[in-house]
Image (tube, rainbow, N blue to C red; front, top):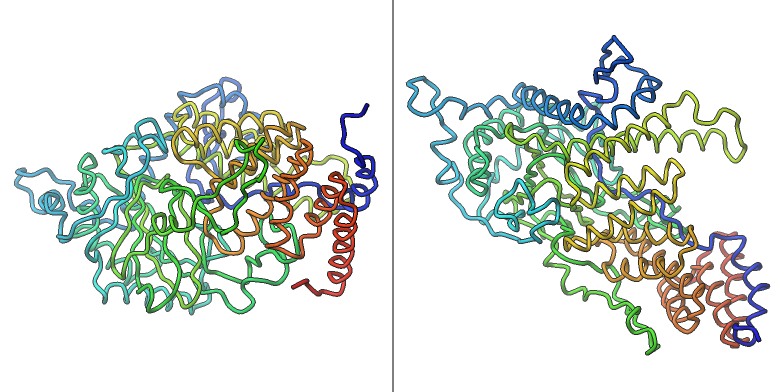
Length: 604
């Protein structure tokens, strides 16, 4: 006899009618995870010496074919990559002094009799002009590297100032300078963060603001950082970039409209281009990041704040996903209570700052009303080249370039196949170099789950799904082991496992992703969690756990009545459970939704 329950033969008709024409799974479109600088002062795969080439070309004048020829041999030359990263770090520290020269205020040793004595070092004991304290937010002791090196103490990677670092007038001056610049022809940009959701200007482009910040670096900010982290000499700290970022509360049309968000999946997805009120999850390139609030929460804006992944799990939905099946209690999901969210979001008053280790994954929580301004200062140390971080930065940038090139190519060719695909656009070259850089980064620091995640995305982009699956699994394992679980890594891992027909593993990945929860980034996060719920239901359906699948699909359609794919899958589930009338009702709902969608009407 068949192992399937009675009536399961009807699944074929229902499945073909309602699922084949749509995506069976909500695939993991590339998430906005880490956004680094695009412009690199050095390109390793073209500046390495090579026995096969007697010429040495500069990064700016090199060709994509040059990158491709040398990617493989460069990947095997770890020491040269490391040396190049160290040299790049040295040059970047030197160039930063052209913009913020006061970082040199502590360069002369004490007691040498020279003028311009060690002004910073003399203030380090008291934190310079900043006399307030710091509140510490602890994280796991190996969430970004083994023992969180080079930071110490290992768990104290997030600090919030108890008193203002900037006066109210200084904060206002930064805002006025940024708005004056933005009112000109160049306006606000997003070249550094690459995010459509926010606007930025570089402090280095604002003469008045640059002088103010340069002075504050010597008198207040760098001494305060060295006071919190005494193992880093203030005289060796360098500011390689500083931004003023503007977040605007969502407008009436900012939360809806046409689907434009990553992983939106339906026409009700978040319209990212219409709203500039948040920053997706990302890690910064550098040693320290200092975020200073330039205006007042609760007065000038509502919402906002900085969310940190390492401070705990999140939940953007209040739904319960627990299964009533006693046989699967170990695989049912229980989400973290939303009450824990305030512990993960830091929202300091005007002039106060949040200082954190740059690699920590964080996000800008949506500003619901008003306008929020932040001063963000990115800091290096001459003594810490951070080879692994630089390699991750390089690999992520090259992978992103390849991804953008591939996207543009797809737009141009449409659905028609073209001969010679991939030639001349640099995509394959960038991907080979990206994977080499990311693998070397892992060799330097295998405890950073983000590097594994970026490698997985590069492998997936190049079409090697098995290698991508291994890298995703490593990203998940490292994240879980370090207490730094990542929703996006779990979700992407589940999608790939399902594509490789590993349904049981995919079920666990989606379940864990929902336990972790998407970061609290408004409708975009809600949509992402609904995608994960739908995919979890599909794996349960594939495993013939029909009752559990039905509960999950019901939860999805309760939250999103227009989720036709989930209605269709719920119909399949009801048919498998011999609930014919319920299955027919689901089918009718699908037809209604699609008919109304053609008329641009949504179900309430």
